[in-house]
Image (cartoon, rainbow, N blue to C red; front, side, top):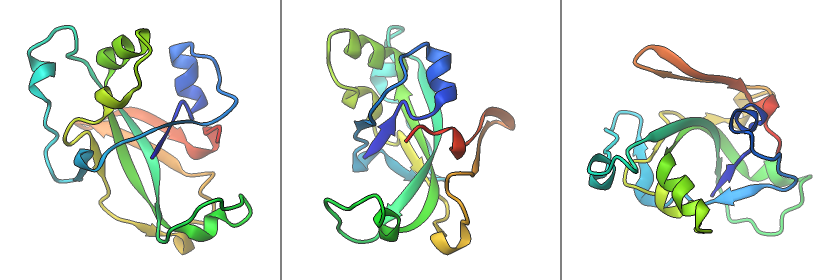
Length: 154
């Protein structure tokens, strides 16, 4: 389960309206790879100029260690085992095309290897404030994203 349109900086970049409620989407298990595994671009993205753009967004992920349902906000953090980094890859042009015909984000976000995660789970006891963590993404040594969790809406 992922939360979209959560960083104010990214919303401003895209000129999208600021959501008043969380926007959820799913990343399926086939997307998950460890930090040392290759990201495999699917054939449809290579064979089509229409869909060949892949965007990356670095995210803070949290690991829930037990089943929970209808949990109040006051105790929600008690269910979190720790935090790690997650890279949300999206076939962006495909996503926009699907949205234009009222289809969900599912197809553009769930190709094999489109969800690198890790390498380490940091226990909650080592994070004093998950609402104030710097998050950075470098690609080939160049910073592509730099933000802080304090800029998240939800």
